[in-house]
Length: 212
Image 1 (cartoon, rainbow, N blue to C red):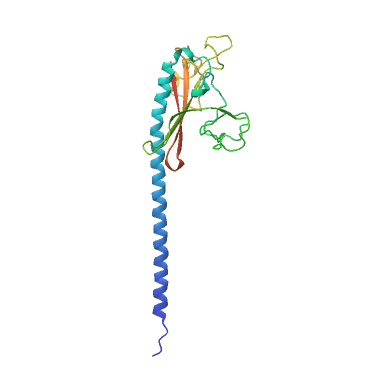
Image 2: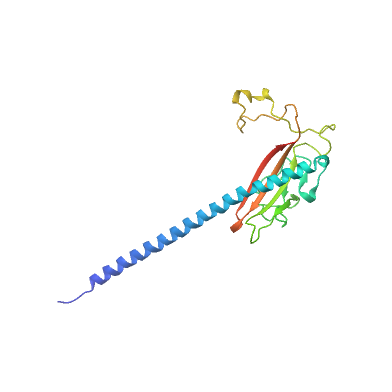
């Protein structure tokens, strides 16, 4: 009987299918591991921002008598900077203001940065063999201008006015029902913006509002 080798052909096809399946499985596992690793690094950077926030709060407490003026050397600004683009992604906003987080003239930002990269940040920690993340912060006093909060023409944020709909919402605020900060001031508000950069250039930015 003449042999035609059909069994060998089917065996080779089956082997090819199994090989392709194995390659796909390996790639899937590798991608999943990468994603999980990135999520882990992301969580690490978010958790680390607390340290920088605490450092900023301590600086505010220690310099309470000099907070009416900018101190750019340590990333402090005595006005709110309403057009702040902390993440650098609002490229369509021509009037945005950027923080030079990495000292590279805002290379992280999308679009043009000419004339927009004007703010400095303070470095709290730099990634090293013993330090997993780089931490930086910038502080903005929530006032319309520098100078004393009580000065003529200067307006500073105050607690939300109960007449702005807060009582009906049990104290909650959201973008659908904004309530202006127009109540009676009990102290000055400060906005602390923190950037944390970890492994694989994973970056997180958090914002905290504190009152003194």
